[in-house]
Amino acid sequence: MKEIEFVTTVRAAGARVFIVGGWVRDFLRQVPAHDKDYMVAGIDEETFQHCFPHAPRVGKAFPVYLVDIDGQHAEVAFARKEEKQGEGYRGFVVEYGREVTLEEDLYRRDTTINSLAMELPGGEIFDLYGGKKDIEQGIIRPVSHHFAEDPVRALRAARQAAEFGFSLSAEARAAMTACREELAKEPTERLLQELKRALLTEKPSVFFRALQETNLLQVTFPELAALIGKTQPAAFHPEGDAFEHTMLVVDTVAAETDDLLARFAGLVHDLGKGLTPAEMLPHHYGHEVRGVDVLHSWNRRMTLPKRWVQAGKFVIREHMRAARLTKPGKIVELLLKVAAVPLSVEGFQAIIRADHHSLPDYLEEAPAIITALLQVDGCQAPKTLKGPEIGSWVRNQQIKVFRNYRYKEI
Image (cartoon, rainbow, N blue to C red; front, side, top):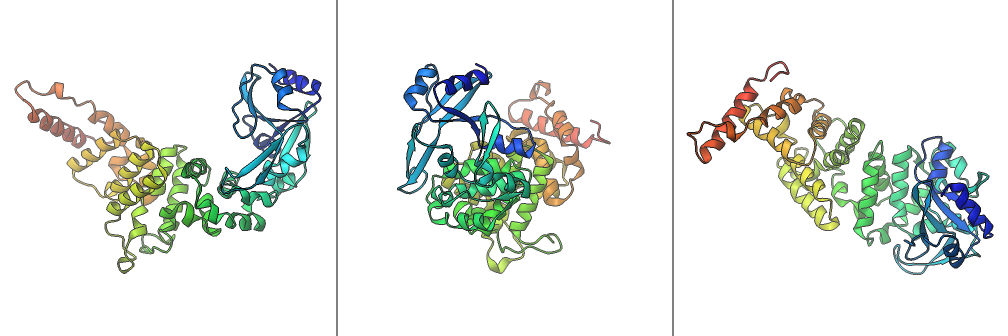
């Protein structure tokens, strides 16, 4: 059905319809707005079901229905208010129904920029808690004391700062810090979801710095917190310690590619430096080995996507030697590994470039070289060769292909 049909049906039942949250925020920011989330107020669930008998209910703790609006399965929620009675995000008692008002619903939301509503069909915007002004000033501010009741809101505020280039208000920083104890107990899949969204922002470092500054990095991503204070040789790393270097790399990779896998691999490339003994600093000999152990520990704690672990391990192991290789056989070996891991060649290039500020010639032309290497096939080997001899022949031919590479031509 068309949006106006949906609105007309709800209003005929004596209720009101609003677009809420991110769509309204982005509309006011004058940037492309995405999926609309609808909220209905002044209606009970039985009446709503009567109006839309074919809409499936997907909400468990509170009603959320999927309604076909303008060709999309749009989420329609009921106005609700919450009372915190236990720990974590499951510790809420939710009240919804005809009596719950728009004001009560918006008051429970996380930040002021998300506490905006547009009533349909007229388009009047309700800004009850200063969201418009905070958008204009680029500020993340909690709506109320309810912010700290769901500790993952602290990560959302940090992610919003990274996503929109906004700054955290003093109230937001205090509210985030207050989430520390409960945040340490939250299901790690909730943290992982915010990590994914943070890595997709224009400047992911803002997210991690916000957590660091509010004393939350240690309880959310301790593997990164361990990099703080791990000094590096100033001649090679004028930006500072291993944490500062990691933030520089992840932002540089993010500026070059939208690939989430590359951004994560850039984030973890130096994890091993967090375990460098104090007496070894500012050097980090062997951090490529230690880093894999740290990544495995992170994966056991949080269950990272399999492709993230595969790409991260590869980059941790190879990011130092990739810039130093000179022997054709070793270069061919590395390029074939690049072709086999989930990480794209372009993603690997972006990480090495961000880490070393340049690429060796063979990596500059890696896509073309890899294409040529993969054209060498065991079926082309002389018929007199058998078993392992065929593998040796393939490798030798691939090395010849690489040696013959000149001026970006195979």
